[in-house]
Length: 150
Image (cartoon, rainbow, N blue to C red; front, top):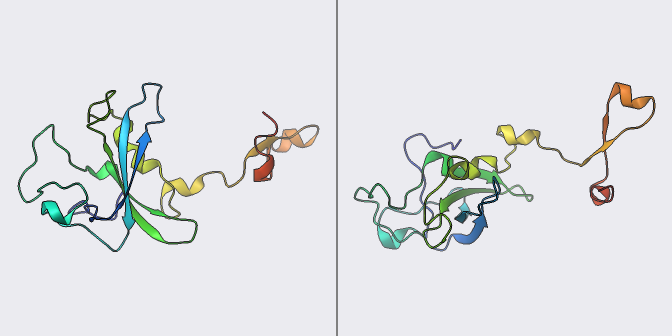
């Protein structure tokens, strides 16, 4: 979960925006991904956040908002920290701005060394053969050879 306990940071104007298709099932729900440096935040005024919404007043129940599960702080390969917010895409014909239970939590699956996602595999596993298989059925394989066995 996010390090924020009293609020969810808003993406500032200029936050990097990209599109994402949910990977949890075959439906293909669309989401917008906002990424920005961890020490920056947008403001509640429409011109102070990347969403262009006025968060100084309550948002409608079916409006655009960011829940704690839709926000995460990640670490890039260069060690820099970034906020990431993943919100449903209202323009997507599949989900029309709604999120499934699983899709609404995609941000929690992103890698960060200080969260449970740190246990991800660093290298693809390869099955052992012979006597060593009884001790440990899998061993690490070089990343460039990971797909060669499929």
